[in-house]
Amino acid sequence: MKLTCILLSAISLSIFRAAAEPLAVGSKAPEVTAINQDGASVDFATVYAKGTTLVYFYPKAGSPGCTAQACSLRDSFADLSQEEGLQILGVSEDGPESQKKFREQNQIPFPLIADTDGKVAAAFGVPMTDGRAKRQSFIIKDGKVVWNSLQAKTAEHAQEVKSALNSIK
Image (cartoon, rainbow, N blue to C red; front, side, top):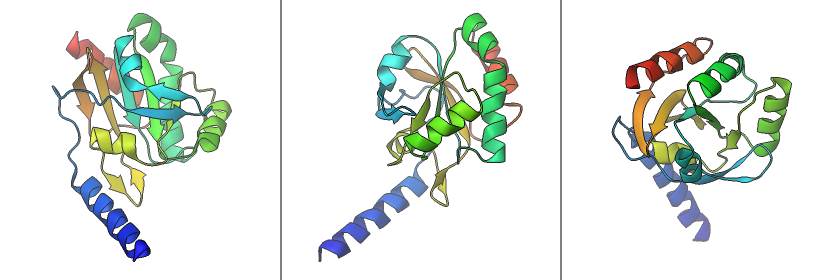
């Protein structure tokens, strides 16, 4: 009986997450908490309060597309963070160990969030494919979504974000 309840809960959660719609521009930004690559708790509301924030979702740490996307943002990090004042949080369902390894191997200067239970992706309405979050990005300003990319680029992601920042100024 207990196993049946657990299975039904898991199926319900899968159906709910598959049916979720990504947050639209103008939506209130989710105030979720998750752990980063070091296992430290990250309160998204606290991050948002410090300034404009890019929250980007990627399917799997270390995969070619996800590496290209993270490295695109890494290579433009000084420009994005110093000139544009942007903070970045990368999110995938990989555990903290995988996130830490990915971050260190690629010298990624921003936190990577280990969304192992999928709560962050669910809060943003990010759809799942094969148990992994789809590649999507959201810019948060003053507690609201001001831009989203529901088919975020990989190697061109930083340029896409720069263009978005210019359009929302």
